[in-house]
Image (cartoon, rainbow, N blue to C red; front, side, top):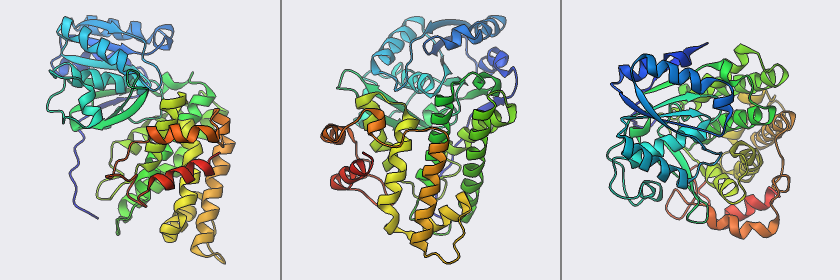
Length: 391
């Protein structure tokens, strides 16, 4: 285990009806004027937005609203939110919806007190020093943004370049998680969300750091339960326990408790960001295509780690198999699970052809010098080969 800092300041309110506590929680953190940021309509149709308004009014908290957040949230709406938030002199940004609305809310929170362009933080030109506080009400089990220090934005003014930023300043001060709010999530997006949760564990699990037994075992427990809960929720969308485990599991997979003390990779996410930036595919769907092929490509780097993945995550019997054979069987089992929950298998399933690979490559942003990832650092040539495996 390597040395680490771990900071997790978020107050979580979890359970039935807890969205009605938003006024109480906002007041607890001294908020008097809020910018409510949400998506494209389900928050309104479900009555959730009305309940939020009523709760804020009961605590004499004023608010302005900005809807329209979309999957792969856009910089153009962030700029709009920054302008609105400054005009209204808000003191907290409340993101309501899936990860996109909350990620966009985080970007607005960074941008309001900053004199420059908020994109400076996403392009690496500047390091954020201030942020307005962020709150969240999550309606989709997926990104874990409700407890994370990350935000990913697509810049629609720069050819849909998709970048992220990581800073503890944007960890929400409170997050509200009611599993009942996820009951009506469509099957496809439930499956995409589960895939995203699993990917956050995989990005941390495949590490070069030795002696990380505690976080290995935590990762294995959450990974296997997420697979079970995903199938249960798809079979019965109104299963409270399945939805609850997906929702809380998504938080635990990405608040970095599973990554503490270990080197992390994130190359699969970098490659997928190119897919969703260029073709606007659902993040989880893109990950479902990329991750099995990334694992296949890097198997030889550490067969023992892949063998453990196969045994612990999928119950593969290692008797009579080499570590490589066991690892390959684990990757096969992962593909079978993703197929069972009806995730896409290939880039072609996402409408992406071999001719598109050069454009995808231009959108892949390195995170390790000129390389991608840290488990097995990838060159541009490696990335091309993984895209080709994914066709």
